[in-house]
Length: 180
Image (tube, rainbow, N blue to C red; front, top):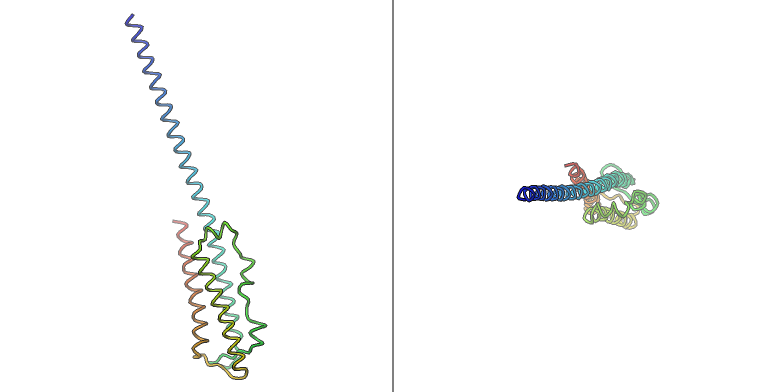
């Protein structure tokens, strides 16, 4: 009779061991699946962020081009700016419209973050302020040349250029960080 119980006890221990092993395997597998799913979600978010940053880097090219074209409106001689109101109104680049086709999707904008979006909006605002300032200078001095050293003009162009440079630097830093 003891032999039967020994056999039964040994079988019970084996069954319990198999059940415990199965539960542990299942738990480890579920945990691994969850981790793989988490990694996949993180990789998708990084890819979206990278795409948004790449699109925003394209904005910088458009911003620089618009600034260069604005500077080309100079009709004065060497060392001077001469803007007339008509030239500014008809030929000054419309940065907001030029950036329109490159607008980010809602998901990309969320991935880009509000700080970079705000930075881009600051560049656009400064650019529009530059346009208003040049129009006013052109109206106030329709026939006079405005020297390069004219503080408002040089400061405004420098401020826009500096904001574009800072924006580009932030974008490149964040873009490179998506790979590491």
